Image (tube, rainbow, N blue to C red; front, side, top):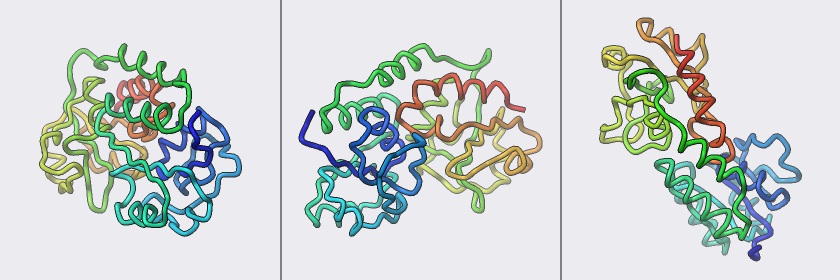
Length: 244
């Protein structure tokens, strides 16, 4: 073990990864950290985009773990200015996610490599396209305004490994705003609707695209990089297969 004994996590995925691998290390987590269900005495320190910097420093963490996309640079700089060590991850695809998990858990925290990480590697090594041919899709992550997955995203990489081609993967932006009329006319085989960050449901989302099958997927399994990765290929494949 390293000298790190007090960790604040500003990323739900990493909160779950640390909590499952080393219960007791976490002293602070965000309001959006929901897994695992029992986070012990960890203090809620605000949202991923608006953490309470003062509260975090009062917790005297040995390390704050963050992500370049989920957290804001000014907050992380404020923590560093207060003398707090901050580790910032970058996750754009599955291989990078696995490397970053190793960097956090083994490199920074000094843990023995957890078994679930090897399980995740095996699960994805055995994953393949769902169905007999590749499906083209767009993937809304918000509405009012409609926003979709664009280029260079972790979720897009997972879907590609399951045979779903994101038609906006070549867009200049990572999360472009696209008018609903353009989405409906994109000529896709299906629309993929995760339940986070926007909570799409059977009643909220598919009605905007009545001519397309809709696959409602678990956002945690599509966008989180942690223990959920081990079961994600199965869960996502089931959701894609159930598209209607």
